[in-house]
Image (cartoon, rainbow, N blue to C red; front, side):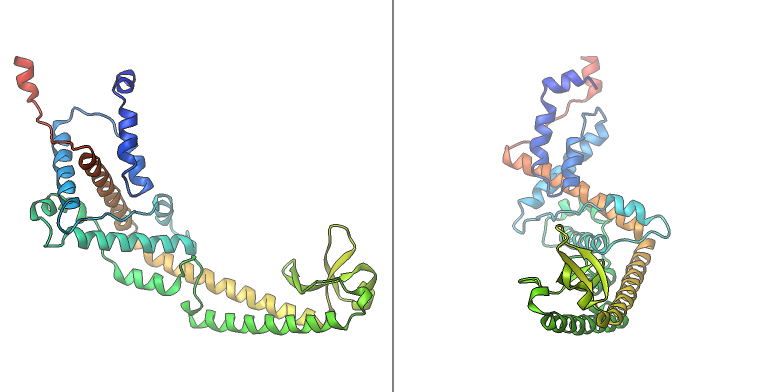
Length: 306
């Protein structure tokens, strides 16, 4: 295709206007990548599908497409055995599953125009309804992508023990701080964490009085962050619990990822269908906004013989 001719026709700016009406970044990107074609079958199909989308958008029960999340790269990784999704990726998969199911239901709603529904059936048929997976991810992963306490009995127990151990250690360190002579104390200081260990800030000259392990120093060197001897054993127990928590979180993420892996092809196909639907809806919105009409296409055979 002649790039200069496309620039003269301002195809890029027109596609950008259409892309602004997409619900997702994936849909917008695919619209901006469109190029003209002389494939009559493709043109006829696209005009029919855009018209169907326009009908649904303007229906008495308007279809409002939901944005499909960008899971292209994570889904490609999911096909590789042994890879594990993060909690945030699993939460995004939950969004994909929900949008797929809701869009499928919306496009098959018998209250909407039958002809438009039939035209888009090839796309709605690629969407999946996997409420079992939705429920499983919802129970295990929070809105922020963190694994929920109730994701497993072991994780709930470990986190409860960890919270209790941290509370007891902080109380112990606060008592140690209060017992220090005032000229060894750091004004307005509190228990803090350095190198993963709970410590108290102490003036350098008071370090010998406290004993224990120096975990860090201030920028000026005047303050030392010390783990007192009485806190070492409790700190070790916290480290053990943190390791146990981390292993259980990793096990849960691995298990959820393994549950999704057999459905990777269906998930990738559903995402692609959602992007296609988003493109159609954006083009239909553009047609509505600018009062566009379906063009009458000339038969190229007649043009050659005229």
